[in-house]
Image (cartoon, rainbow, N blue to C red; front, side, top):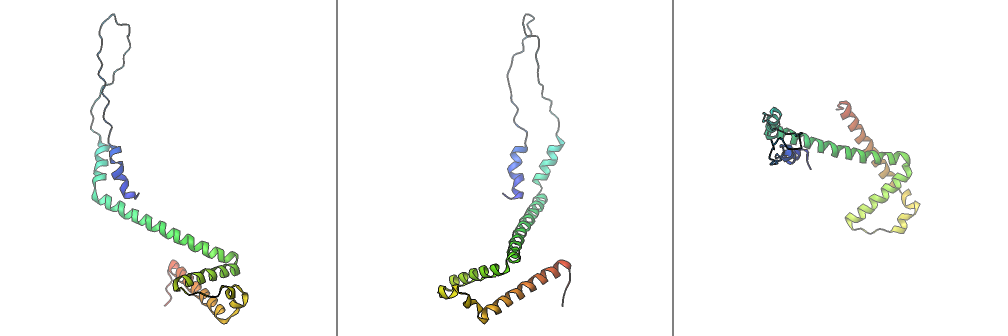
Length: 164
């Protein structure tokens, strides 16, 4: 449920409940044993808070502002989730770089095979010699270079530095 939908759903709950009416005959007979009685008398008074709440809930400007803030909240949450994913990615690399690169290459290889429908030789790819070929070192260098450049741009943007 979006934040902007809350006033619409709560509108019915913000109204005062219907009064409960109990019909009772008051006995004024002096022989009646009950001498104690309590009675509630309703006194109608203008509720200033009610008019303010109604004007706020019916205001389209407020609704637009709430919808804008709600969208901003959703965008912020999405950004936080993306940053969390990036952080986990970087932490796993920091903990075990070699294992991380091996796992990452295997994942990328599976993805590539899935996307291109190319069937490789799993037995050959399982052996270490396969990854000592020149392309593997080049791939790792390119990957690290792109990650360093990406991080550099993020830091420059965060610090407000423009490198032209």
